[in-house]
Amino acid sequence: MTEVAAGAPRCGFVALIGAPNAGKSTLLNALVGAKVAIVTHKVQTTRTKVTGIGMYENTQLVFIDTPGIFEPKRRLDRAMVNAAWKGSEDAEITVLLIDAKKGMNEEVERIIKGLKDAKRRVILAINKIDTIRREQLLELAQGLHEEGVFDDIFMISALTGDGVQDLRAHLSGMSPEGPWMYPEDQIADVTMRLLAAEITREKIYLRLHDELPYATTVETEKWEDRKDGSVRIEQVIHVERDSQKGIVIGKQGSMLKLLGQMAREDMQENFDRKVHLFLHVRVTERWAEDRTMYQDMGLDFVE
Image (cartoon, rainbow, N blue to C red):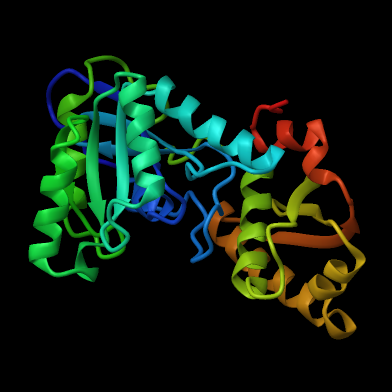
């Protein structure tokens, strides 16, 4: 348990926004000090607002990791982008994360325009600073500073932790005095059913990123706590076509078995209990148009 410093308690809500694959989930996990968001090299892996909770001295920082902000094309895209902007509006502090190597691209320009239109000022965190030369980094920081929407600029590497402690301390100092919103040892505000579904979805992305597009979602259909302390979990992997079902199942069920093993091991580590996991694959052609799916993911059904 975190040792708490003397002084009045503080509690701050911090939204992490940015373009897809800027490193928001990696930064969230680094700030919290534990894995609460799925991380893959695929863009748009975060679909929901994942809330992670971190302690810094006498401050509780409640982080909202939002989906990446991009030009939406489908209903699911619109719901994800809507959730990202709403997450930022709900927080007292917003951190815009930018990939140093990608720099000031169209996606970043679109986000900055959105901030200007809303007359919002935020903190800038330039991530992946080890991927470009120092002169380029300083030039990028100067150009972004001139946009006039950033109160402070931090240069970090969410992966190595470089600069993360300074950012955390700054966020703590900005947080208002007030009671903590969560128990001191709680690190996430996601239901166990949703976290279990996200863990399985991460394994699908990690193993099938080349063969499978963003046509899958995972639903935890049953959660049964057993007397011996273990849990029985039944999940459905929804795909849009029969051919995708074959990819997920694999030859003689080999891929589904591997996905189940990977997900079960991760769940046991996260839940600190024995997990009996049963995976089923179902063709649900229009799952991305199903209102209840959005409710399960914590997203608004955007018309």
